[in-house]
Length: 363
Image (tube, rainbow, N blue to C red; front, top):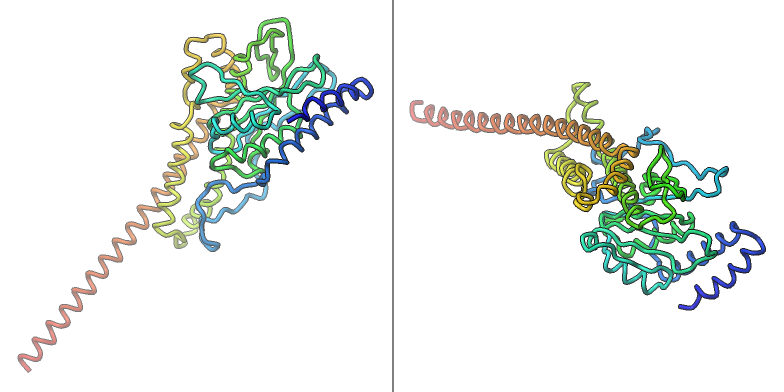
């Protein structure tokens, strides 16, 4: 694949004539064409929630004005030229990292790298092979097995191209609206001082280690993954909201026992994803003997309020389960009552036959 060399020559000349902005746009366009030549899958996909009939009370009813769960991402500060963006997305339930590495190598645009052995099954690190200007920081990518990707210094158009490319190696892909709504963006700047997080700005040492970026990326990836789980929880809440209204008004419950069991399964599946399938409740083992990286990871998690958000999600899930448990008990009691009436009716029928036999014998 020979286009990166010609692209570098072309964009190098344009850089001298028109500046950084035009060159970046040309790189973005070229990357989009490279990916689109091998990627035909649409960006949008259904969020993996159980399908229900059109008239079922489990049908998702979107809120008219969904409340914002977190602050919206800010753009780069135009007054500071040395700032660059770190952007994270959660696009699927999981990635096949081996297939992803193979396809990226065959594309010829990015070079893949494996980190330490204990991260081989967790994260794939990649960098762009092309460079518009040696003075510009290269594009870097962290692909996480749990379905999240974090971009460093990557233009928006190129990010969208990579996300579209990821659909080929994704399992349980998410809707495009969820992907971009639950994204997370931070800013970083190079400095001669030690790497640290100050307020909402990452100060990255000029001799930065890739593991420093990994620590920040790990927290951002966990945040966007939690964001997609929060979105799935909102869908569950919307689908059972009418049940509380029916109970309040004393109306008949419009859910069957099968639908209640299905919804309870969704709640437990989401609770498993929050508490057992990831490291939202604990520090990953990778940081146990790396105190400096653990400090960066915890600082970023605190900035993104991961602990608080996880606790709130668990509280909401507990409330949803309690509601479903109440409905289950109510439906079971109603079912037992019907069975008791059936038995009473059968006994009455049997008594009626015995009375008829008694009358036939003595009359």
